[in-house]
Image (tube, rainbow, N blue to C red):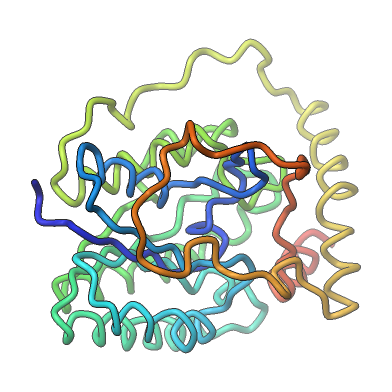
Length: 284
């Protein structure tokens, strides 16, 4: 149809799909949703998702990139480096240079590549302190895409992601609706027609935010998410430890109606180790 018979997604929790939960306790996410768009009406379409929560850029390049290079799919999506750049003292330029090396390898192998820039955190309480680093990294990503003929999904300019309803309670991962919109935007970048419009405005909020509700939300977030992250960080633990990619090999997609519920009901939140220290540093 559009020249895509196979697709490999590599990256971290964003690409794994947190917090877009499925009945079996795994995550769907924008990458699965994009694969569903690309596979529509094509039972021979194959898809792999090697992304895993908590992965830093070097881990992604060392563990996931070689697999993508080996299977040579028709398209690879790569989103990485976000966990790296928000570490205190991180050299954003150096992170971008390492990402560019990975993009260059894929393009030299003749593989079409789609990369993603970071969303604008201006509208997120506490997390807005990361806006400057994200903006610098995004400028590098645009240049990388231009130099290597890669496509870029500009999440910074996606106005629907500026709404608080696009973000999970942890303020790090997207809601299912936001994942749906990101998948539509990625399909658009690839030139694949879709029936829905990611630009559609959110419905009017029935509960407008006030200063008091915002501060209460900050306190609840600190207790429910920030403090547990710090405790895990101090112990050197990550909820990504011991986990494996959800789709480690190219394979046909299983229709959603065939996914059976399991006893897993809780959707874990990714415990970013160094990023947690960064958030704690700015919030204290």
